Length: 398
Image (cartoon, rainbow, N blue to C red; front, side):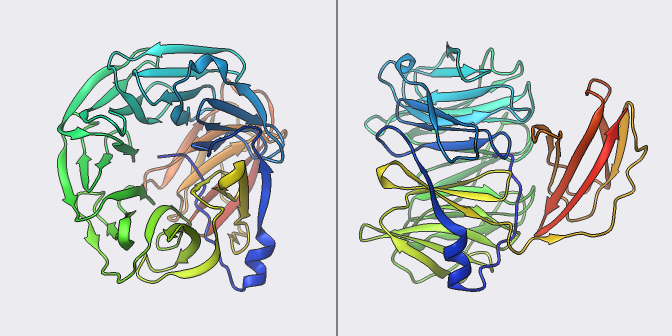
């Protein structure tokens, strides 16, 4: 699961939406984007087909940083480490993984299984997972691999009892994983050592996302919507009499989401505030085909003709006025942070806007302790967010 802030969006009027939703930039080369990930509010990466791009101005413009190294195979998925030190690109065939630390020098690794890499996700700087399966033209075994050394080596941890292509993975926590393939969802509670089939449907699943460790939703063809409240062990389908395919979505709160739907070659952006039971149309056109989000209040939409659109979701965020009792402040080694019950993300930035730390505390955690011994002395800004609320506070590292 990508590490992002979850911001509740209130679209009170059409004019508010129009002012917030705008074309942000155009990528230099052809082909629809596969993935975008922002490490800070200004620095991010995007990949499409054989190309990789970098922005340093919040997506206003993009620089091509890699193309020729990929040798014809196109990029299918991408992931960034939680501390933003490495970027990983999974290729669509041959078990090939490309990675970089600075975006200029790339290395390639063959992970040991000759299939396409469909999903990559890291829990921390050492522990990560990937899912591999065949291409659309082949029907091959689905594998899950695991790394314990930051992606330097990978081991085959599990072989699914299915054969197919385009399997996907959602990492909820170090122990809790979800995988889906066509119409089936699988759940693991032991870091992928064993899996059980959670559910199956009569149509294909397009996307599965978790809001927190317990609550999540999946969407698919012909209006498939189902939700879980038990960490993906079971899903409850919502009966919807709609003919469009829901291709992708992002959570904006525990019951709020934005989704892209496709019907008769026309894409539509829709919103829900009741976990998919009802949907409101926000915009219609043939320009949207994918959705993603970052940690600076922006939802990104990938469109045709290499266009990227951005929707700023800062509108409607309830900023908490009271200060948290951080202690000690100033701090030299350890900083104790009491966490509000609504906390889903804890981010720390330096004065240059660089992301120093991003945590997703356990929903039961009442506090968190930050280890600052190796941090440079200075002033830092902490942002705690979740369920449409946000707390911003500064502290000093001595």
